[in-house]
Image 1 (cartoon, one colour):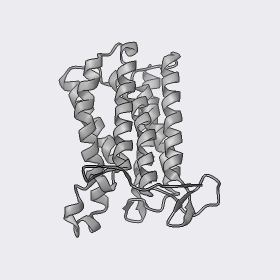
Image 2 (tube, one colour):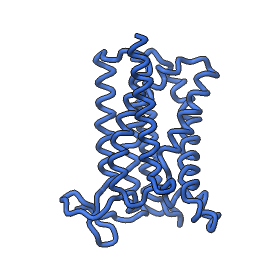
Image 3 (cartoon, helix red, strand yellow):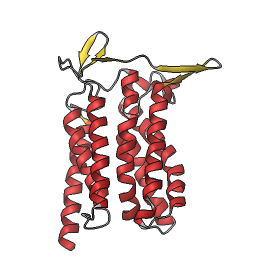
Image 4 (cartoon, helix red, strand yellow):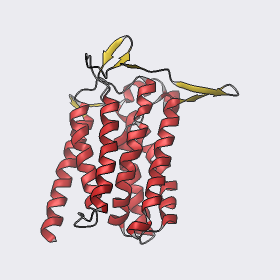
Amino acid sequence: MMTSPGRVAFTVFGLEVMWYGIMIASGMLAAVGLAYLRAPGAGLDRDRIVDIALYCIPAGAIGARFYYVLFEWSYYVQHPDQILNFRSGGLAIHGGLIFGITLGIFLCRRWKLDIPKYMDIAAPSVALGQAIGRWGNFFNSEAHGGPTDLPWAVIVNGNAVHPTFLYESVWCFLLCIFLIWYDKTGHKKFDGQIFLMYAGLYSAERFFVEGLRTDSLMLGPFRQAQLFSAAVILFCLVIYGYKEKKK
């Protein structure tokens, strides 16, 4: 069983550097690096990969925080000074994806780039970034499930609980490898397919793992992540079917 060593990685001139930030930043750097390395093989401009990342990463971080604060507004309306406290955690991946992808599509249109191709090159990178970034939840002792006696449980407040962050991290890492393999071996049938596969397969995992979590963001009586994931799966199936039929 694992136990978090604490939130703080080290201190520099009295400033505490959090593991959460380190893992998020590491995930972002790994994601950009992977897309940068794979870009020539897809006939894409490496410089444009960097340009898009420089815009979309900050947008994704803001979107992730905005989304989290929105669904926890009852707390933040009482503590407005904590809204911009990124260091304490509280980033919702769905908000980051919405803001980041929307801005990425806008930039591709503005720069007259092939949107589906750039989305395909980004998909495995996003999965890799999520796989690494999720470990920030481990150090913060958050995003975990209910009690379990499984040998890979994590200890939070003296209780053995499901490491839902670990389940998602492993899934996203395997998803990254699968998508790269699928693309590299020539299985891809149309541009945009890799992104649709990422969105659908990640959402399928998130739907089930979210059911284990004890800190889900809620929309009325429903877990918003499950509702969002179900909507994304349906959307991907419809678009995938349309593209297959059109081809």
